[in-house]
Amino acid sequence: MKTILKNTIWLFFIAVAVSSCSDNEEDNCDPNDKESFCYEGPVDGGGTVGDKLLLIELKTSGKPTIRYEYDNQNHAILMGFSDDDRKTEVKYHYSGDNMVEVEYLLDGELVSTEEYNYSSGDKPTSGVYKDREGEPLIRIEYSYSGNEVKETFYDINEGKLIDYNTYRFDDKGNSVEQIINVMGTIAPTSTTTNSDFDDKPSAATHRLFHWKLGFTNNAQAIKSPLAGIDHILKYTYNEAGYPTKMEAYDRGTEELVETSEFVYKKAN
Image (cartoon, rainbow, N blue to C red; front, side, top):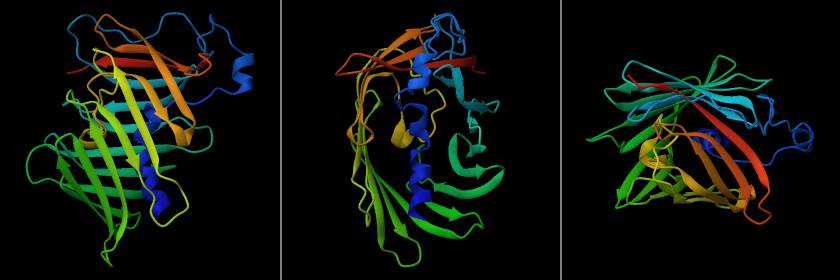
């Protein structure tokens, strides 16, 4: 149960995390080939000055990895992951502008559901995690203090503490630190820090889980010791100011580790 819960929490990070390329990818580097991870040609992204854009696709090492779909109110309603073996999708449901339900699906079958409750505003105060049968398993509580959010998980039947996470923001609304704990296991605490933000609109236009993972701008450095990540991020922007390409360089060796591309559409 804990493993499934942790997977749901970390789904968002897949869209922004960076990892090393394989040796095979390095051997096939072709700056003129759109399918190559080091392609240096024009990147789809569009947009002119003043446009508000929505991210519809993330490409990593030249290959589509994540896609997004939106409703007429510009709410992200689907996040899909490209995988040769499994079809993974996340569906989002809203009441007004507030996300109230998230469904996690694997190969078209429901795996789990999270529901969120609000007292006022756009930040939930509580939630519940349910299994594929709709059975409530975990109660989630959120507390807010200044630029810090605490997320606490309790066994819904016994009431005992299961896990807790901490998220911190800067004054501009950028997520600068995420501290993920796994109680009752030998897994160490995972801390991810984002820093040196630019002054451009964030590529994370979908605003998913914005109360704990929101971004206004784009981090130019990311560090996650547990994942072995310590990268400097360099961007190419379109005329509207949104990133269309992100290059991740190892801080120590200054070598290019990975290239990501962002594709957008105009918001309604």
